[in-house]
Amino acid sequence: MIKSKLGVVLILVAALAFVGYNSVFAVSETKQVIVLQFGKVKRVVTSPGLNFKLPFVEQLISYDDRVLDLDPPNFEVLLTDKKRIIVDGFARFRISRPVVFFQRVRTEERLRDLFGKNMNSAMRRVIATVSLPQLLGPGRSTVMERIISEVAPQAETLGIKVLDVRVGRTDLPSQTSEAVFNRMRTEREREAREARAEGRELAQKIRALADKKRVVIQAEANRRADILRGEGEAGRTRILAEAYSRDPEFFYFYKSMQEYDENLNDKTTMVVNPNSSEFFRFFSSPLVDSQGRDPARVANDLLDK
Image (cartoon, rainbow, N blue to C red; front, side, top):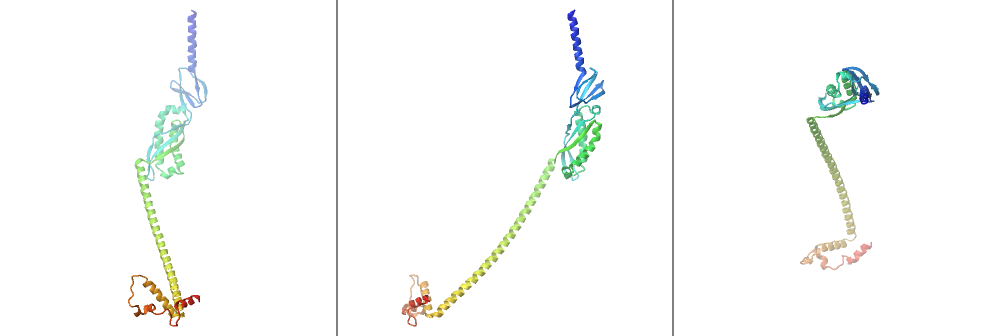
């Protein structure tokens, strides 16, 4: 009898514990909870802490209360400057109205599929109205604001609030990239050809100027050399004339000795009948001048003067 009562008590305690466990739920700082009763929304709990519900009657649906990311698939768009690019966009949002979110979307996975397509459509419509410099330059923020204004009304109907929309990166399609690369290479090759042509033209100008300077310098040097040569010849002639005027006989003797040295220095030279030639008269005549003077002594006298 006692054992049966103890078993009933234990069953009652277990039942009460089970009911109590199913009557209490905790809400964390990062969550917001919808309490449903027979499929209908009874209330929304957003404050963290312990809360109570009717066991087995009320169910809980929990959603994240933090800022969430939405990264839909990339898409291709044609810009106003006829450039085709691949856009990788993403958005940040919060579930601002969990009841509406539960009624219209139910799950975050379905939201990413549904709203991701709509966001891509809005981005495609806005981006198609701008050029690539506007999308990548200072006007980028204005484009993002236009996209947010496009998607915000629909986001409100789904129970979310779009906080930010951004274009993560923009790439050119493979065919366009190759065409742009070829165009850039052609442009660089053209610039290289122009640079080489300008270099050759400049080199020709420098060489022509150098050749001109060389001709001028050489002509000036030749002119100066001719002047100096003329002055030297004039000085030589003057000196010889002075020497000849002092003693013509000795001058003739001196020139004859030079000619003998230049022309008779070869041991194989033969002289036939030198007495018959005026050129060889010093071979047979005594070494005195017309005035009976020794030429060597006359030469010393001239050197002393």
